[in-house]
Image 1: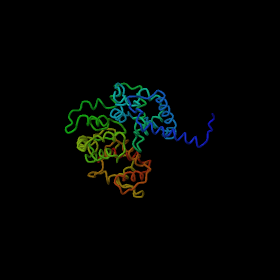
Image 2 (image 1 turned 60 degrees about the vertical axis):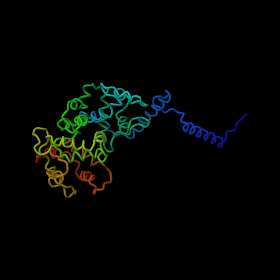
Image 3 (image 1 turned 180 degrees about the horizontal axis):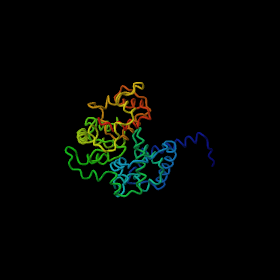
Image 4 (image 1 turned 30 degrees about the vertical axis):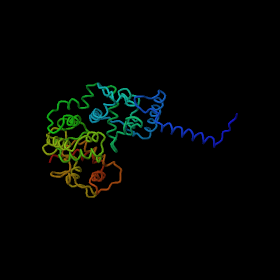
Length: 362
């Protein structure tokens, strides 16, 4: 018996297959329990597809400089300890047994990281992986945080448990008991990156908090918590804080010595006798560029954050972040003021200006 193949019969067969698949899905027979695992061929196919996708998309999507090459990566380590180690484990720390029952379980990065290039790691961190527990981690516009995390993950295979604990700040946070209105775990999480003295453990990407205005610190935490201020690291830390905890933390760090008038000499900060062009911007601005004086908002008695004694590398990084935003901006909105101002600062003056502001103790 010969069956003649026609387009009509092929279409009917295809429709039958689709209907059978929908009936199978509707029936609920397929077991989606993570405890059931995958067939070996299914696991191979999904992983093979994922690796090929990452290789292809990272070629076009990752930047030319996907990895940080400076700093001790304290902020990346602190975030990894708080948010990543539970699933992935860490040097001297096994992953959570419960999280390892996920399907698929998170990989051991001390082994798995060597299988990816820097660009591929950057892509995975920025975009995450569908059908797994890996989220799109990076905050919008904060490629600097992704680069530091790439560098940290790259170091994991050869990192000792002691080195990991030191980078993640566990030693600094473990002994804190005098926390007043704060739970010890709340303050320890901040201290891990910002240090017990609020000076950022000497890291170029971590700001000095000691001596900063309490109102500004509290507002910054609230902005991180609700996403008005972009940072994957700080967003994760601030999201779990109550308003009372944000207020208590702000007061705790504001009461410490640090930035502002009276900063201790010999800290390595530049002096006010820096680039004279920077001094002009701070004190008078550049009217021809519609650039207001920094002191008009950040001077004594003003509501904006104190910059005197702040880390110069941090100030410069923030200015470049605002300057390179690239979005259309409505300058009438308060949160858009700094991007407008930063774009009016000549690029060659950002570093001199940051050094001047950091050392201006008047």
